Amino acid sequence: MTTHSQRASHKTLVAGVLIAVMFLEIMVTPLGTSTPAASSPAVNVNFSSFQRFTARANNDFNPRIFQSSDGRAWFFWETAPIATPWLQDIHYEVYNWTAWSAEQVAVSSPGQKVQNVEPSVAQLTNGTLFLSFASNRTGNFDIYLKRYNPSTGWSADYQLTTNPASDVVSALVAASDGSLWVFWDRQTSTTTNLYYKTYRSGTWSVETALTSDSSPVQDQRPAAFQTKDGRIWVVWSQVQDSKFSNIHIVYKTFNGATWSSLVQVSFASDTDTHPAGMQDSNGTV
Image (cartoon, rainbow, N blue to C red; front, side, top):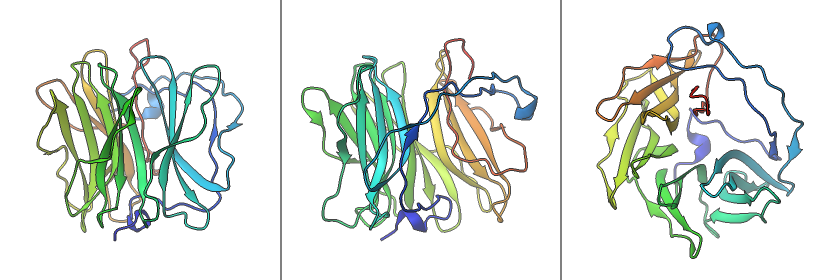
């Protein structure tokens, strides 16, 4: 069975991890330019103090936060016992701007030596909430989905990919036209590339390759969002050499007909990974 810790491009976990949160506005560096990020204007902001979010004797890590159309905040994370930190489930809490709910289970494989990892969440225009994640319950990592209905709760797990390679990090976009986009990275024995599927009117498209790079280039850890003009943005971490010393943030956009050329965002000698993206109310990405 392929385990999450066996994937060279995805870091392993250390024991005793807790989640802390800050309520903050982050430093914003506008995208859409090929100039170094350091030369772009930035917004200086103040950070709140850390607040401890989880307190059990578990490993809690890899959080994802999302605001649903009713204004509530949904907070998902991976959790695993300290004794078996490689056997993760996905839990969540919901904040109604008065209090947090009790901790709840979104994905679990009781009694099995299974990893359920890398949650992503989005909500369609009809209100349906989708959760994507990766699981190695069939022997290798594949992408799975769940739907949430307020009256019936979570659906059963739905397996989206069946490739013998490792499909691990996924990113969901609920587009303004009612479609759902699922992006993910696929690691083979030689490299990692990005793929996607779309869900429209109850039907899934065939999977499409967003990247088709060969070794030593590896495209991994996608994040995705839609801007007000309707474009779909996918930003990810690209390994550019065999020594993993040149890792930069890149992105592409989809205008409804074609994908743009690749744009590199970071240029420093540091290792740049785990990107995220969004558009604020002023239109800044």
